[in-house]
Structures are given as structure tokens and as C-alpha cells.
Image (cartoon, one colour):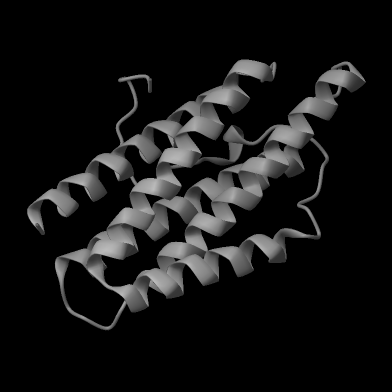
Length: 173
């Protein structure tokens, strides 16, 4: 369950120059390997989530589009969070991340064509998978405290997205 100390109404938390640090210099290679694997997974999955929302947004001037834009912005922040962590550790994003973009495009565009209910159900399903994946990675990887806090905050945001999409689903029935 997400830590209730995270304010999920903040879409893009403020960052200062001193928030950036080079990490992992004194870590064991095995620990670094698991951190790299986890960060690559989170980075590519957040790219997929961003892309899903990007292609669900229509030209309608309605509250759903406003909320999809806010969710996309939040997912873009998560994607940037993990890209920053990759670079802080001296790693690089996967060269195969384009495949996750394609999956995101397919899911986002298809659900948009199918309508509001499909958009919301896709959001609940994708965010539920994300929450589960976050929980697994938090349990099995020995993260540094700063990175763990970022992951926990992002997981709390995903819980907020699920709650939001479920409420909209209920109100549209």
C-alpha cells in the first residue's frame, strides 16, 4: 500500500540543482545490476504509460481530456525521474524503449477509438499493473533511500490514477 505521506496532488515535484547526485560508486556490482534492471524496467514502462495517455487525448473540451493531460504530465515526470536515476548511476536508457512506445501507442489509440469507457478501463488496468510492478521492485531490490522515495511517490501517484479512473467509470454508468 502506498505511503500516505506523499501528496499526489503535486503533479511535478520541484527539483533543485543540489537534488542531483552521482550514485552507486561504492556499491557491489551485484546490487548495481539489480538497480539497473529495475530502473530500466520502470523507465520503459513509464514511457509506455505516457504514450498511452498521449494517444487517448482527443480534441474535446471536456474534463476527461483535462484529467488525461494531467495524468500524462504526471507520467512524463515519472519517466524523467527514472531517466535521471539511470544517469545518476552511470547507466543509459534501453535502446529498445521504442518498443514500449509502440505498445503505448497501440493501447492508447485503440482505447480512444473505443470510447470513454475503454479509456478509463485501460487506465485502471495499466495503473494496476504498474502498482503491482512497483511493489515487486520495491521488495526485491536494495534501493538507495533517495531512489526508494522517488519510487514510492510514483507508486502513490499510480494509486491516485486508479482511484480517479474508477470514480470516473462509476459516474459514467
